[in-house]
Length: 224
Image 1 (tube, helix red, strand yellow):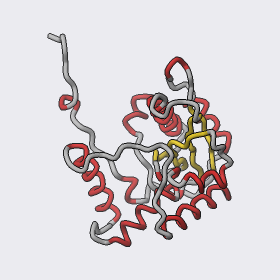
Image 2 (cartoon, rainbow, N blue to C red):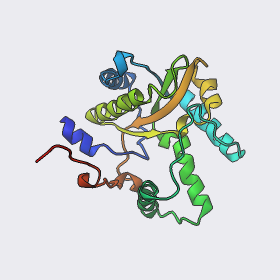
Image 3 (tube, one colour):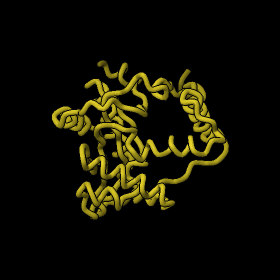
Image 4 (cartoon, helix red, strand yellow):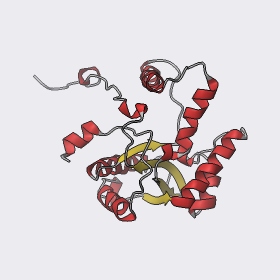
């Protein structure tokens, strides 16, 4: 797939087919993604790929925590988005699309909870990639590098006929993840990427999230 086409086609996949993805294909995805730029070529990222019984145990652990009322405790404390203004509006517009396609009533707590739990199950993908950083690094400095390698993973996966969804939920209960995925405490869990073959019959996978017109977000300086 051409790079421009891949950038335009990439989208968050929220349900996957049960078909497994081979270790070789995920390895190829990560080898391509590892060409991402990083500050001074530090390459601060590390990947843990989960599937099979390990993934099932993590998913069960996540759902048990949620049903027990235990709040998430992510290791990378991301800033909350504003509750009003343009950024909130974009978030709400996406939720409206998703809920409409899925037939979810905004006032139906049971439906909304079931939808929320999907993220903690990696959207039922056959595999997920967990990204982490060495704790000896400052938390903020490598975040831009992590963003670059995340984008590369998604584009490389698309080239290999796979879909992805970048999501925080997969690492929000780090004790569960560490219990089953053998990630040392010297690594800071940052984010997860669900990966697999998209289930295009699933309504939410038809979402095409809107983008702000470029003239609304660009200031031209020094041009005629």
